[in-house]
Image (cartoon, rainbow, N blue to C red; front, top):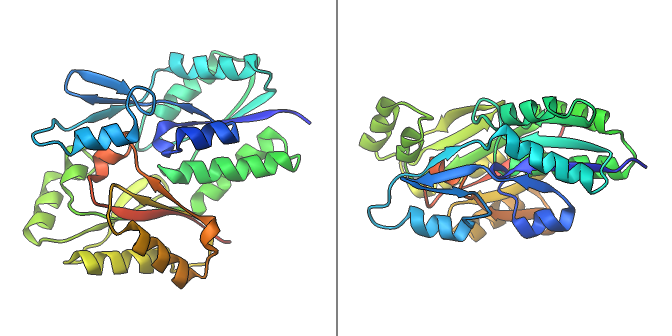
Length: 281
């Protein structure tokens, strides 16, 4: 059987230990606090990121894609270790330049089999596709067919997050200052949805409890195939997870909890909770 290796980027929020255990290679994206630049998950852990992000008077971090050369180095390493092909699953091309760097890196290796998949999402949406792809590979599905299936199933992925404020999305350039100002004036706890690579405001509840409730309603509105609960240092994440499990009738062992890291965290801010969901067809 051909050896297929999966590659993703640090916007997947895949824990380094989990990635290693599953044989998934993670290309670190870049995060900068003023002149201090780090490779996400390599030079800056998730815990260290949040400590710095929430420090008094901390500069707002900026995120950037890694260079094509860095993607090529990872691809070269994977093939040197004996892989026959690569399926490379990345953050939505509408949200980051990572996939463009991956495509350029692939063009530098014309004799190698590399398939690139746009997850149309971020965070654990990417990881969900990687794990699905590995299951397909274990069943003998060829790399090219896996990439087609994952690209197709990306349309069934959603990410819903209950935010504390729109301020971080504004600072990250994902929404306009006017949109953020309206949210602040109304004291809303907005819910964002990421669907087909687009970030939209799904609802604008006025209190945290109503926002959490509405977010759970959105997450559990359709039959769930796979799910990962996400949070940004939210103290109520366990209660949120338990309620999602109860309403959706899920096996608790199938519902992981992931802290959003340095590549996605700056756009959400602290105190958020939500989920990446793959819905059944």
